[in-house]
Image 1 (cartoon, rainbow, N blue to C red):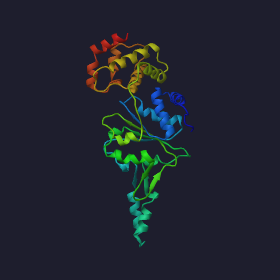
Image 2: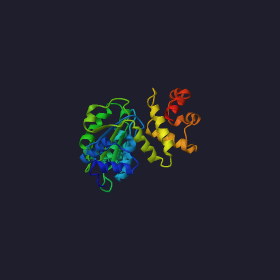
Image 3: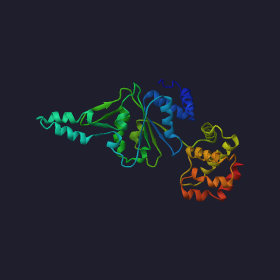
Image 4: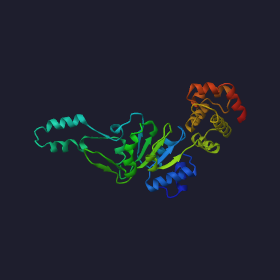
Length: 294
């Protein structure tokens, strides 16, 4: 797949995948793709960080390999592990071999290597390198970050018992973080960094129109205005773009073309994900916001 040659081409590529991008984000993506540098995306959940990787995978015709991060993630789950039962069988079969070195050489080979996402990302498919999405890196334990430095810097992964795997063509690497904790500078230095904020009114309006083309302009405007007002509130979790789309879909599926207090209150669960936030907004606050957006 030919990579976009300009920032404008990058924006058009994303838009063809229904992803609305500001020029600053398109610039970071363009540079990441053309200079073979990992892209580190940080921002609140639901603003489109993960979706960007899926869109690029589809539009660049590259296989997407996703490493979903979580607390306790280790090398055996992220990169590789040895098939110990198969190795033990091989040792039993090779017991008649006198040289220990020969046994070790047999069991530490690709035949017994189980490849996980990080190692898979260094391999091409039909001559095409994949996209590696390291999603929600902030969920891992901080020491895990040190293990990523080799692959982010040199696009390689060393297995002490065996050999070093190096990508013939560097994969596209995208890391995301919801900033529940700070990621070490050593990771950020190896990447292009971009903060994805909540969208402006005009951008969110465009996103909703692209995702839900049958929505009326009036309802689209009122939904976005309502969400934008919600983000000014002191809530535990502000709604992201994905919640806006879910909420709009819910209202449309209820065959409503306008925002009414009862409908808003009955569908707040699509927009807000904490009961305390829902209780805070219900009632008088919903009325106040509806008055503002008329």
